[in-house]
Image (cartoon, rainbow, N blue to C red; front, side, top):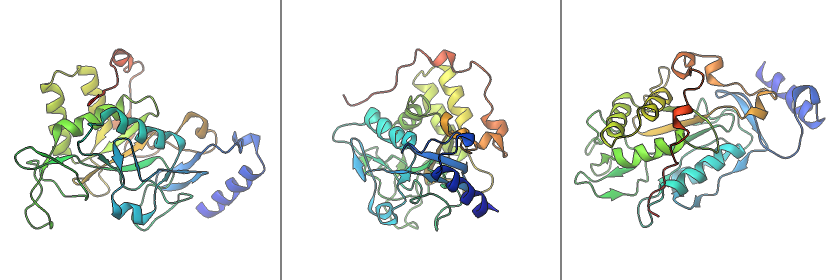
Length: 269
């Protein structure tokens, strides 16, 4: 069924079908659901840029294709949180070229998903550049030494900067950030401790979500953006429209109004 629908969509795209709202103008198009879809004319994220990099493991996979919006989001967030001379934002998989199923993911099919490695420190608090997805316990520390690396600590400060930059971004609307619940609570506690506006903390709570039907995401953040407005007419389907995320992702009209005065976070400048 999926292949037939996709074939029909591809044919419509090639013919410039106005009924689907598709204008084959070279811009990217996310089609379908996150776990059952494709990305048309996806663009490839460069393997490094201002404030970010793709570690070798994910460079080798080659799943670095996404919509214009998610690539712009990654680049913009990395620039806003960059600390010159400090660790870079580690970026994992987006989608395979063309989207659809891959060996490593059930989702990541529409070019609207990206995995982000945690910022980590040594147990004494020195920042380190993270090159792997290390499982982090509820205490904020990696297992030692069973996962094959030195004991590290989840960096609440830098990881909150990532979440803050994502949920206040102008490049795209972040629909959900999948994350292990004990780490979510650590981030929210840190946000309150540094005096973040309650509206911002509430928005973070609404966007941060431990998945119920997959790994608990104790080793990375999985970020998904909402369907770009122009892609909904081409068949892009938001998670809140079709699955158990509908309640956590529901948003009261106007709840972003108190955030209008919050400037995007810029550090290290």
